[in-house]
Length: 245
Image 1 (cartoon, rainbow, N blue to C red):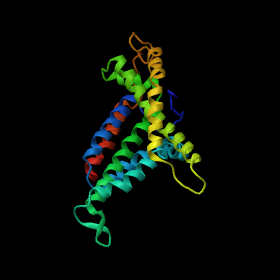
Image 2: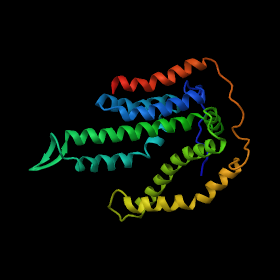
Image 3: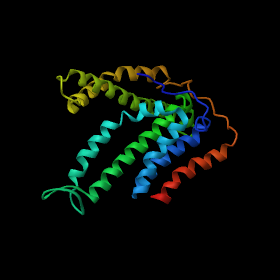
Image 4: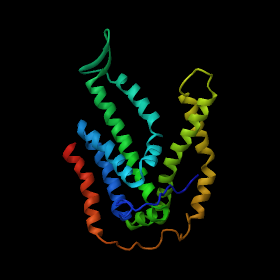
């Protein structure tokens, strides 16, 4: 498992201190559940994409979000069919395919999934693992808990990359002339691979000080220039969701 997805850069988001960056990520994720308008859904979904594009470029942004496209397609296809009450938007003969409420529901789910995933990926791409541990320790989180949380954050994008590789492998095994890939076998293979990685993950935690007085990320963080301004920006940007929500 690649325990670091950090990409070196000198963007304004790279220069943000890890503490207001962690706070902004958490606040953005929490406030995204309060958004209920179509404009709010668009801001929740596209704001992390814009920040990621400005921070690490279009190629890396596409690489991260392309892993979520299969989930978006599944949600877009099946969620409206489960909510057919309300004002119909798309009908086939006498059967209602999509309603206004169903469309609202699917856009809400996709915006939250894409927005929160994008905010977390943006954090991982612009901060080193040891700095994330230091930031979590600054919020009075115990070392073992901070280390475990940082490893979990690294594990999530790795699962996305692994799913993409499994999907491509399954697609190559299909008969000639068929398109797509089987969903259930891909998810099953991903679950088996995740279980098999438990010993490796446990070893990585032990090597980084889990269960003992660790060294990585135990040093205090110095305050950078414009520290309080960074805190203000980190709070204002997520709070803007309340205005458009």
